[in-house]
Length: 214
Image (cartoon, one colour):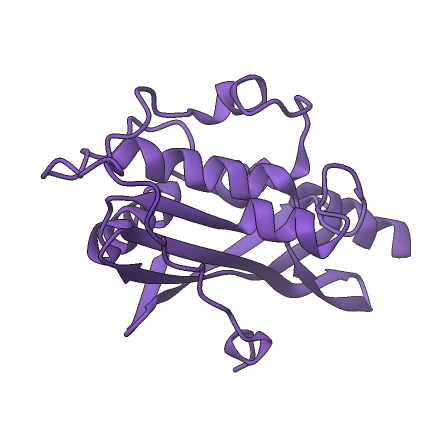
């Protein structure tokens, strides 16, 4: 019966795959943070919110704070004799100074699986490279810094990832209703596009682990 729990978890691509992860702090920092010369904090937050909401319209709830937002998405998966249900949570924070904006992202997936009388809880800090790369590539598109919207079906090839990269499921799983939808509208107002890169850009903000605990 325990194998059925593993099957349900496999649909979420958690726990069962260890490939394409950040393996140390330097890798995690490179993938989970971004800096945009010439951008504003407000535009970066608006783009990030649009990316999250696009992934599953109608099922995303957002709590705002001074530095960004926490977005939550409930999911339920039925796999014949096993089920999995839980929550995806994106914690997004941004900084700004006169030279541009920076941001940091944490993605947590947690919930439970059940098969018959057996159940198991899980909590996964999503450190898959694909999840970060797709998220930020879509932000770049909405900011006008990338010419193409990275669709789910093209994400692996465009982001230099294996076709079955598990991290892409943070925005492109079977439970994401917006996975194959056209992109949102780009944000208005051109950026300064980093005309003076010699000046100090903002450091990416820190996200405390306590922000992921209810």
